[in-house]
Image (cartoon, rainbow, N blue to C red; front, side, top):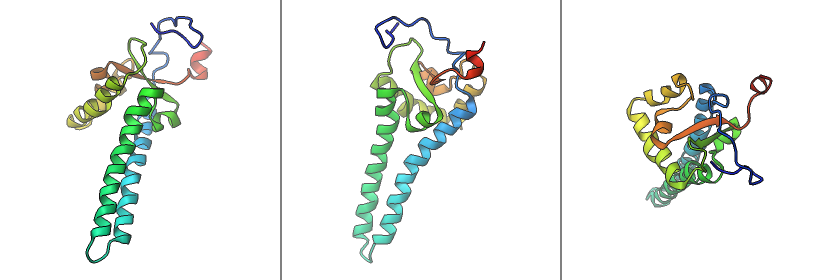
Length: 162
């Protein structure tokens, strides 16, 4: 169990109470991919505009765009997830990624979740994402593989009143 913000051990986390709704998770993922694909689209537009007859400038800009896109994806899905438990999309949607055992999300766990878990989930033709809609804790296939769960950053008012 990890300590709370003041060194006091946290009690067991009720993941079902904090479960992130499937639609909110989809929205957060959509925001994340809009950001990543937006960088690639901008690089492609710049390459088209600056590309001359020899296409050297356009090819170079496109190459830099690919590298930048990979960097933005790595920072968003791995570094931010490791440092804060959130990607940009999850931050905007008010969600966070937590390990099932309550420990902080490690770089290795974030890499496993996003660089292995997402492709495996996509190889199931997206059915791995649907696990989150039917699982009692809202865990998708990539969450099962990495031992993580996506929860709301804070409980909603309706769950606080109970």
